[in-house]
Image 1 (cartoon, rainbow, N blue to C red):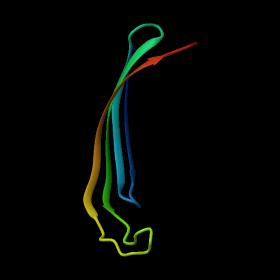
Image 2 (cartoon, rainbow, N blue to C red):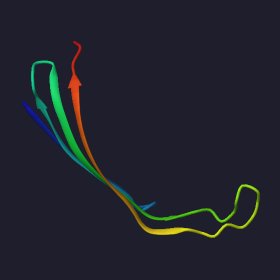
Image 3 (cartoon, rainbow, N blue to C red):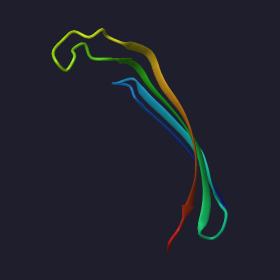
Image 4 (cartoon, rainbow, N blue to C red):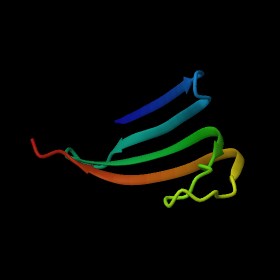
Length: 79
């Protein structure tokens, strides 16, 4: 048996979006293979402007902070 999933989430107030796509394939009655992909977009990221000692630190800005993740795993059902 195969199970597929797709999830899309977006928080427009903070410009954070993510999307998941994957599948689970039964290998035996209790063991299954799970494979998936996730894309996350955090939008723009900016560092703080003060150091821990109160000194001024240059601001670092990343215009497009995003991640692509590929996952593979095994699931075992104990019951």
